[in-house]
Image (tube, rainbow, N blue to C red; front, side, top):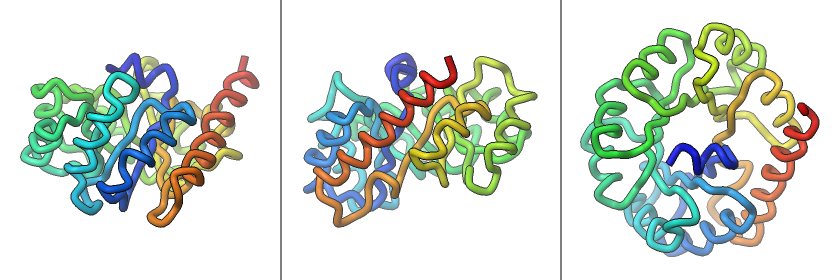
Amino acid sequence: MIQTLDALPLIAILRGLEPEEAVAVGEAIVAAGFVCLEVPLNSPRPLESVRRLRDALDGRALVGAGTVLTVEAAQQVADAGGQIVISPNTNAAVIAEAKRLGLLSLPGFFTPSEAFTALDAGADALKLFPAEIAGPQGLKAVRAVLPKEARVYVVGGADPASVGTWRLAGASGFGVGSAIFKPGLSPAEVGSRARAFVEAWVSAGRAST
């Protein structure tokens, strides 16, 4: 599954998504080019949204949950059809459970110690959070000690204009929340915002080659 995400390593974070709008919003984001969607568990009826998105987008996008803080929550995500478990913190037990369930694990980290703990526990990728505090220089410093193959996603503070800067600092991808989705935005508006990130990612890749 991680190869699917590698194709376009952008994760849409849909905090506040209502189940009734989930499919329309998800279709707009996938049409823009995204291949991974995350419903944070502090959203309204999040597991229902995960199930609706998985049913609608199966085979076209990875669907999972964020703000997964416990082993029990990871199990609930799996039961709802989720394929990826994303957390704001590094919890080795949650990572291990995600892998036991056959899910992708993307835990949050802020320090090198947390990053290595997550990788040792089996994380498929790392989430630098909150990235706006670390900044590109902070990412670059951490990258210097991490294994080259480690995937590091930037979450927090990125916008289309800064994608190139973050990529030069070592970002493997991005988790994008309110810059794409906020409650009240129409699917068309969400799709337009998502396309801007896809275009920025592609442009930054061209500039670095």
